[in-house]
Image (cartoon, rainbow, N blue to C red; front, side, top):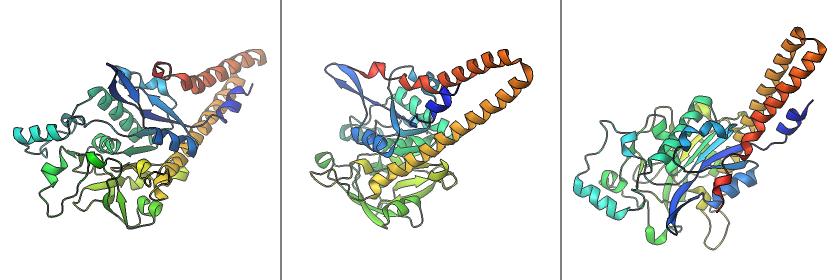
Length: 333
């Protein structure tokens, strides 16, 4: 019986993406930006949406197998999750100004924080490929022990060079300069030392977690991209990167053409790592099945062995395949 092997070899790798919740027609609706989904699918993986539903953080094991995680936009990360002596001395007046300027973003979503931090830490522990975009990069930094600016303008805006990181009146068209660090993955993907990137955020990396290395800076010194040099080899299934900007939305006006080829290459290299990671998992499963089969041959008669073997293969098939359908039934309207 070779059903499990035949099917698992044809199953595309799965990338988990946590949805964002919004209020629509007096009820909550979960959504994920279509650009992210298009890029994951076109690169050869299957996006699996993890709905932002109360209690889902304790059910994440039901989404196994996990071959990759992409975390993207959302509200501010709860400051209490990275609170330490480095927290800013923002006054009550400062906080009121920030709330007025960024009312939507400052709505803390603790359930989403919990879901995403759990997934980020899982990727750190199990070497699962991870790509963080905007808020996703901030979550990754916090999960690894770093901290964030609660508000860039208030905490970083006193520097000689001030950068506008968000423009609500020109949401998609706004760009600012980013200087790329030479010989980093971002430099290899974009093949340029300076690019113009978009921005939709008022928070950002303050203290970068020790394991990460910066890949790009804004003129005001804010880190626009980072990675783990010990966890970056897409061909070997290793990918751990955070980008503060949105490459999926960096497109020419009135067109789907990207500002730079590197925008799409970020996702393609991520999925390349996801595919390699899945292959390693399948190979490990096959080795374990072979080992158990050898043990069974020595322990049972032929009839008993065939019965136990078929049961074991069926169990492995269910464990690997059945989670494919979990998590989608509640997404339909």
